[in-house]
Image 1 (cartoon, helix red, strand yellow):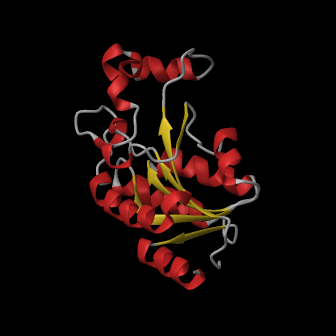
Image 2 (image 1 turned 60 degrees about the vertical axis):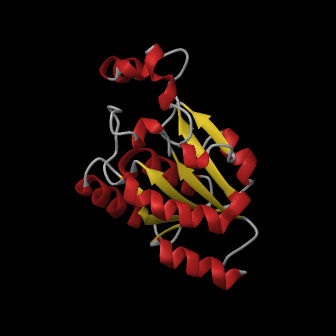
Length: 186
């Protein structure tokens, strides 16, 4: 896919809830994928959108069962988990209480039918949900495999295998491949 002026980077949920070792949702491997995210964010500059998972103020429907299991998320002591990781503070960002970050706030920034590169955590949940919703929304989607992380290598690989079946609307590539694609288009 050639580089276009519609190209955006979506960095999914790089926040202490997933990066800090004391968080119940700590994602192993995020330290490694974060180095790739840094390279991508530098290349995309102001066309990088960071997302944050935040618990809803009012818990309804199936989310009641979810937050019964993860009740720490609504505690007063959990507020520090929901900001962006320190490296990304001040960057363009949106927040959502849903796994998919393909929400109206994101679409308002990215525009209709964008070309979007997705990376972040967790490959098997929020990245997968966002990528599939973006494809459904008509976006051209790339998922950068070495800039994503999941709870286990097996979950990461399984999610990537699912995403791979969405070609040609979705492409899997590495950070080096994405940076090369961007360089050709500039």
